Length: 221
Image (cartoon, rainbow, N blue to C red; front, side, top):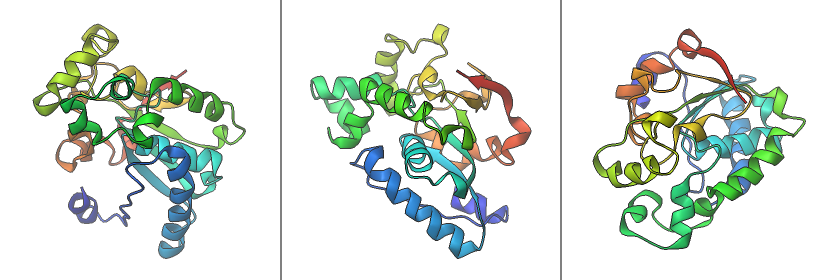
């Protein structure tokens, strides 16, 4: 991804937050990073592209830590805005294939449980800072390879093709953040990527460069 962004002439910053902590911990951390990035490049606002839980970390940063004025738009890739049933399953009983996805049952995994995510959405979507943000969401619907087992489980639990599918980790319906535009609709052929490939430059760069040219003007409610 970095090579493609660099060759396209974009000034970029790649950041990582705590992989084992919730969005309540990572939100303020990312807010500080946004200030550092903007100051370094001498700009007022940036575009954030966030993969998976990074979308919720960004949401917490902009809404609950007042970093909205540092971001022009956010594009989330496969983010479980309503959580994922795999996190629920990980908390009920450990299995080896969930270990590959989540590494361990930590605070990050717990924050992605559907109940925790629903509580986060309730606090976030009704926050006065919410209208100050500009989110666009992208959800995949293909599961294969090492995500086959988890994809089959999700397919049997609200993520079947008739329900727009899943990417092996997140049901498509969960990737649609309320009050946000949707990049490509349900089962669009360009959404045929799994949760891992959504973060890679080869299949994804053309999807959001420039993002506005391929934006489907729909609002997820």
